[in-house]
Image 1: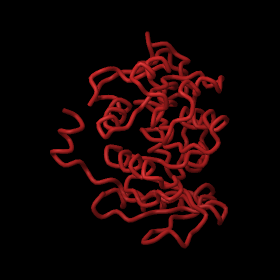
Image 2: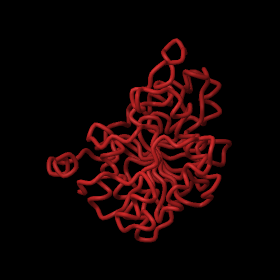
Image 3: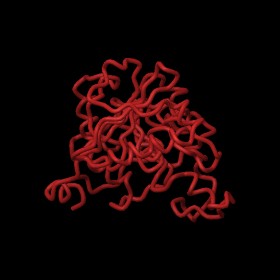
Length: 276
């Protein structure tokens, strides 16, 4: 892996001899190049596989130009709220505003928006209508299917739909992200990446979903607490990467969000390769 810092500006990218990065990683955190930060792990892992990655940290979500620093990436955008869920980062359990952000320079508040993943993706989509967007990290992972949102006190649909992203890499991404990168680099369309463990995708073709358990429909989950509990029970029973089944839920009877089984854990050698 590279021992230099990841590029944070177009000038730094050009200095590395790169005119167009393979991926642009948008993060709600300040840049910390340490293995306790998922951003650093994923970016360095991609670098080790021969892919170029440029960072946009804490972009101004009120300015579409803030995500245009490098132009359109060759393969896609990677988006994360950072090491913390943006709502937990902003509010106490009493829904009172916090006065410090541990992942921003000087602890400054206001460097990221509420529901950062959704906001960042919508910002990207204003300019890059068809560029693949892959979301990950804790905020996307915990919202990959319909879920109760404490902050608004209602059941919300999958973040994949509200964000306009193409794919979720949930949980640890050391297996799924390189596999996604290799597939995109080979020329596959992002819509064809329906087979990768540790990912969630959307489709309108129910017949293409195989060997899967159908969860209660979103409309039912949203209005019926028993249906919500039943859906959660099925999800909880399918978290083992060796035995879990594929799951999917329906929206308006015509749109399907599909969760593939979790990615397999890293082997000892893979762990050394990633973290050593």
